[in-house]
Length: 118
Image (cartoon, rainbow, N blue to C red; front, top):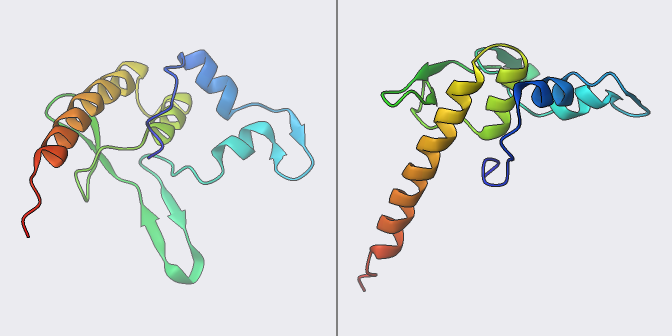
């Protein structure tokens, strides 16, 4: 789960991270390396013969960002890049992380509260 250890960076810090023009030998730039493997929120990823994946999202009832298809919360790294690209506001990212903490606590309380039935 990519969202567990993310620091709550500012918009300027996220823009610097995902748009860093510092050249690298293998990845082009530091920014390109940071973007590698992160789905663009609201965009598409072409996987060649496997097809194209759409990354459509919705704003949930508590102001959080969720995937349109599954209603799951969007991972933190994707939210970070969306803030850096201006797709969502940093307040929406922060609200999503707040809701995630509450939902994770509720899920784990229920999960660990179950008794195993033989």
